[in-house]
Amino acid sequence: IGMLSRKAGEDEVRELFAPFGEIREIYMIRNADGSSKCAAFLRYVTRESAIQAIESLHSNMVMDGAARPLIVKFADNKHQRQQ
Picture: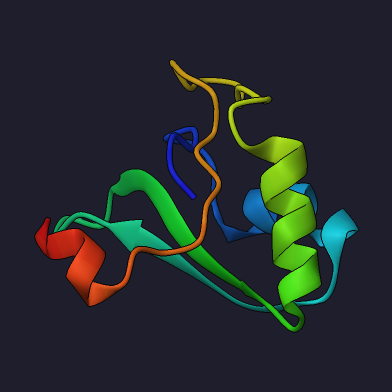
């Protein structure tokens, strides 16, 4: 998940993504000083929940305090990151 609000924490992410299915894990990405990088990894119990969240939220919603719409997609694998 990218383009989160700087103010968004795990609770806000959970609230936004919970309607699509059971969440297994949320990992908020932070700078060394603990400040938000405005991104997170979220893992659902089922792949179908992830697909629903992507289809519903990707580029369709701007969080309060964010400049651009959310980026919601499957994480890039190692090969995709190297390109």
